[in-house]
Length: 504
Image (cartoon, rainbow, N blue to C red; front, side, top):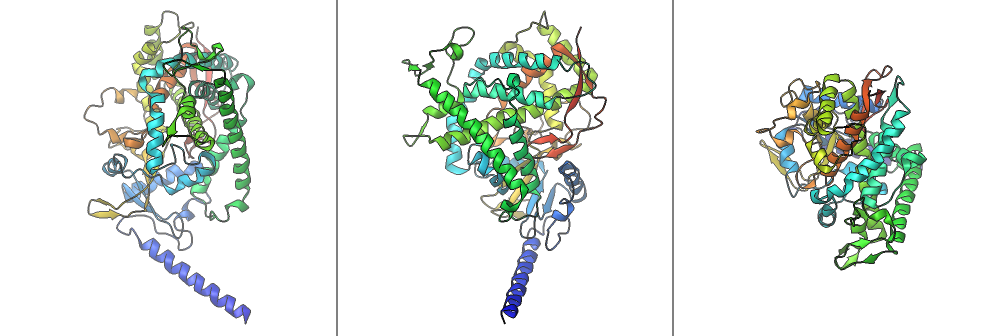
C-alpha cells in the first residue's frame, strides 16, 4: 500500500513537473531560440562542454536566431540573450531597470550585497557614498601609487626576459592587487614582493565556479553536496580573512590619527603623505569608515562587502584588460611601434620617465589601444538584469521578472558596428562622432556604469606604457590562441602568454 501511494505521488509529481516545464518553455514563444529538452531546457547544449566553448556556442545561436535569442537555462527557467543595441540601450539607460540578474545571487556569499550586487535604495545610497572616491579631480593622488608598484612589476618582468613564453596575467594580477589596496584602502600590501597569491588564487577559484554554476544542471538545493561547494567555501574564508585584515589594519592606523579642521586625516607616520608632503584625500576605505546612513555608521559587514567588491573590481578586471592589451600589442607589432613612438614623444629618457597625470592624459594613442582591447576582450562579456517591470519592444513584451543577458561580447564583434571585427585596429576609435554609445560598453553604461572606469583607464595607461618603454613584446612561441572563457569576467583558460626582450 505504501509502495502504491509513493508511486502515485511520484507519478503526480512528475506530471506536474512536466506540465509546468511545458508551460514555462512555451513562454516567450514570440522570441526565436533553439528547441528545449523537457528536462534540461537548453542546458544539454553546454553541460558537457568546457567553459572556453560557451562564447562560440552563443555567437552561433545569435547567427542562427538573430539579435534576441530565447534560452531555457533549465526546465523551469527562461531567459533572453540580447545583442540588439536599441534594446540594450533601453535597458541600460533606464533608472528603473537596475536590478541585477538572478545569477548574481551566486556571488552573495562572497560579495554579499555590495555595490555590484545590490539593488534599489541600498544601491543608490552606496553609489552616492562611494562616487567621490573615484572622482577625476582626485585621481592625481594615485599616480605615484601606479608608478611605485609599476616599478616593482617591471623589475619582476626583467627576470622573464628572453623566455619563449611568459603567462603575463599572474604578474599583472599581483601588481593590480597592490595598486588597489594602496590607492583605495591606504594599505601597502606588497604582494608582488612577498608573492602572496592566495587571495588572487581564491578569487580565480570563485570566478571559475561562478561560470560553471551558470550552466549547471545541479539545483542550488543540491549544490552543498558538490566538491565545488567546499572549494568555494574555503576560497571565501580566505578572501574574507584577507579583507578583514585590511580593514583592521586601517582602523589601527586611524587610531593614531588626529583630525584637522577640514576633516582630513593626518597619520602620525609618513605613509599617508605623498611625495610632495601633501596630505592625501580620504581613501575609499576611509570614506566607508566615516560614512553614515540614516545617521548610523556602516556596520562591519557593510564595510566588508564594499571592500570585497572594490578589491575584486579593482584588481581582477583591470589585470585581465592589461594582460589582453599586452597580448594584442605582441601580436600587432605595427600597433606596438606606434605606441612606443608616442612614449618617445612624451619622455626624453624612457627608462627613467616618471609620468604625471598630464602625461597619462596625453597618451592618446595608447588609450585607443586600450579601447580596442576592451572591444575584443570586454571584462564583462555579459551584463545580467532582472526586469522589474514589463518592457514593450517592437510589439513584443518582455515580462516583469525575466532575466536578460546583454551580450556585450557579441555586440563588440558585430561587423555592422565594427567592420572587420576580429582585426585589432585602434584607429577605429579615433573618431566616434555619430556612433551610438551603446555599441561599445566595456564599462557598462547608464546609471549602473562602472564607478571606477577613469581610475582604471589611468592605471592601465600607467602600467602598459611602462612595459612598452622597457620591453619589446613578442608573441609566445608556444601558445597558439586564447581559450576565452566567460566567468564573472572574461579570462583565458590557457593563460595570456607573451615573450619579452629588453629595449636597447
